[in-house]
Length: 278
Length: 278
Figure 1 (cartoon, each protein chain N blue to C red):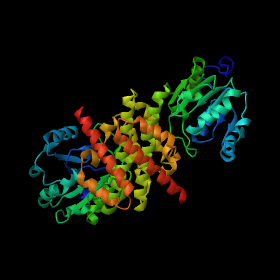
Figure 2: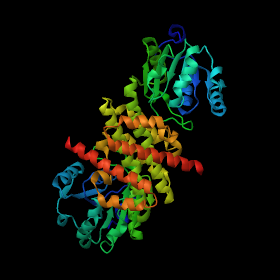
Figure 3: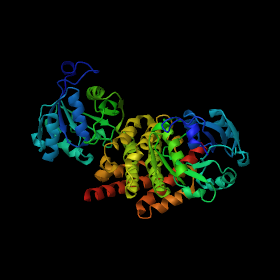
Figure 4: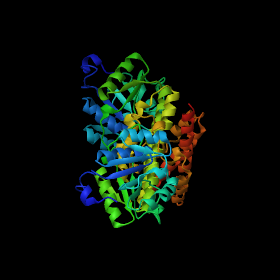
């Protein structure tokens, strides 16, 4: 486990000398590894089941990679487990017992800290709430990080690491974090799916999704100053049944989009009605 | 109708001297009226059925208001009709026959130009594709405006006016525009509803929607560089059934959000599968 007195100059400083092994090489692992390197941490090793993604990330950050859990270094300060949710427990079962000095941290919004119960001496969660794609760079400092740990020492370390990487670090229990993750699925993945349907509609008419960008960004920026319910516009909130009927007729070739349209419009109207009654 | 030679210095210039009557005082009318005033046009009058909204907008821009269509001025250059879609025809029926020199322009994404058929000598459409709320200011120059007109002279005027207000003016037929409007409902209203559900989930946990803002904005900015389908992340696109089951269980008190979640997740996965098969 990292000796904060010797390795880290200050909590507001950098992570120079912190030896980290990255377990996983997906979108979150990639962005987190880059942020850790940028903060001075030493990425000692990358593990991934598939050599292709392991080698790609290892090459990007300039370190070794392995594809077997038995080959993972035993003397790292921190093991960041950023694999599919249902694989976290089995990875921890393989790694923790023989690496008792290390701090084990997973990055999942949905998996509780208790996944490490009976396995790791020092464990924590660092959930960076953002939509990460390898093909899109971003400023990790602006990513809110939600942290949790199994003991006071681990908590100080997780908070210190998160505090160097991000300007917004919030302690949050596993129970609350799963609701946060659910909310993120709506605010990000489902909002993005709405963009995807819009793109599909436009493509069929020979129109580019590019024209949507100012609307998409204003919709996102608007909720800085107005609550989403107050910010709502369009036919559903006005209960403009004529426009909605026209829209449904335009999607006759896409029954699944019609279902989505009807469900969304009904919910929008219901939420507004409820809002008005408050 | 406006004499462009005497009233408007240049197409890239301002609208000084252009006498406009605003029919309607809603969100679009308010933002458009402010943009027109900012460009030097003379807002001669505001009409709205309700005195309250008419007077509010009239006060903001410093002009008279009326609540009866018979009282609308007869010598304006341009009549901007920005009322509910299903009221456009009847408003035009009342105004056009006795104001034959005016240019009539509606601002609807969904109503065709032909709504003016047999009524106006000069007619057009100026559809500013944006989400307008009175409580949120924005830069009209960045709002894409889609234009159409019934004759060449009207088209030149509508394009000139739109070109002064916005840096992005696109001629588009009524038929294409209704698909654009439908796409905008998905990309804006439905995306915003996803924010609203997220806010609802967080509120029940005592968490503020503010923490979502970086995620919401990155999701919107991401589709500048990646297509929405390529940008997708989260449990649905990974087909992470365990996480999805957990999420559904967290919404047991909100069956309508569960329906939305299931529908969205199914569609996201389908779209990705299709994408992968291309």
